Length: 439
Image 1: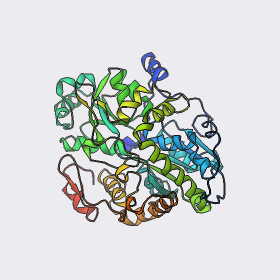
Image 2: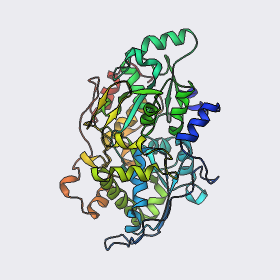
Image 3: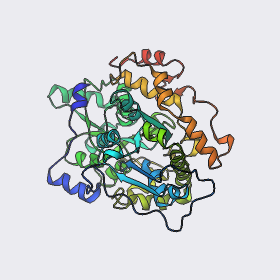
Image 4: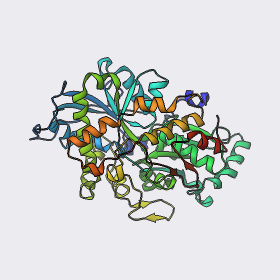
């Protein structure tokens, strides 16, 4: 695990990779201090503050995002004027180069040239609070579903899909020849790392012994497949769709198949910023929740994708984003799915609500793979970081019906694709039942 966490991100320098990044990836112009790009444009014209806007302590906030479709609520809240509507007229939405850059900018905060909050992998606020000693708050879930595990075309003959066991022999053969299969993940201990690990382990493949997991920034996944630096990756959209569109590989699965309506990204902020600016925090949450509602409406999908695809945000073709956003999936190996039942959701089925039970699963998996010690006080840290009470306050302030606000912190027992169940009341039993683990 230490080797994985120290491993440097892959930045391919071959001509082919560079061409791919220039043609399809994220641009990387920026300010030196934040590792992010020029903040987004001014909010939508003619937006006036509404009567129920909180009396904010500050109108300014710097929020980071990675070029992934699930960052859309932050981008839309800026571009459609929702931040301005609730009094946050000077919000900057700043592109980050990678998850480690996002983490580091959160650690220094805007006062040090970094950022105050971010679109984030759900486990990261916990890892930052525990390992980096930078207290964070998780304020909302930004989405459920919407990720995928994709593989290079060379594996098509193996018919790799929801079951990873077809790769077991290939992994053994590669290892015997001292050429281990390499699987790209976006951040050690992040959601994509956990989905990849779960999928491999379910097929009898030990992710720490049988293959190599390589951290790669999301916008560089496709380029690394193209030059053969990695054989597979787990990432959010639009990068899986782009891989298919470039005919470089296919999606073995989309993660809604792995775990129905699984939690994915979150909105996080530094604890000190929230504690100092409670009304501004509520205003940000009100804007983001309203943006999530907007993003989930079918009639807004095309506009959402057009906005997000722009140069200052994703810098990709809108066609790389649109169809999977609608739930129409071309896996790239002949399989297609129209109106998939578990597409990326921003609001539907309580997608925005930060269930504590989901964070309990994330921390249990961090223990499983050695990212956190076995004696981690899971419930204590979840109660410290997860601020579902602030979510409820913001939801009520924008008129969300009581019937749409969960009454419980738990979504109950979760069932994964392989039949394994997770009872948030009994995480130790779940951990003990798993055959492949580090703990």
